[in-house]
Image (cartoon, rainbow, N blue to C red; front, side, top):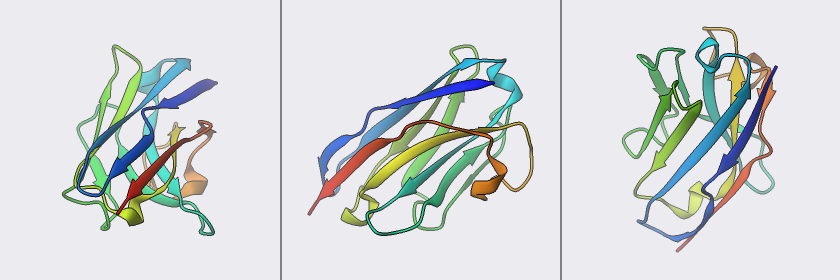
Length: 124
């Protein structure tokens, strides 16, 4: 089992940047593919980005491609989401998730473990 704790959320103006972090504990971190999802008020949770076990492969939602970057530090048991050029529509609670699978990483049901979320608010 793995425990996930997100941090780094907050209030930022449109065009600004934030970096989210997710600290993992428990079983070997490098055994897990990792993902970031978000849930805006009144909307369903949606995929943001994912990264493979080694960090060699990443994927992004079209809405964040070119603005967000996912990375991981297996030695430090951390996955990060660098968010640049933020827009008001990026406002949401952001969740870190982990899975032992290698496929279907854009799908919420592929993930076994979830953090509690960190809130990001982008003002216009």
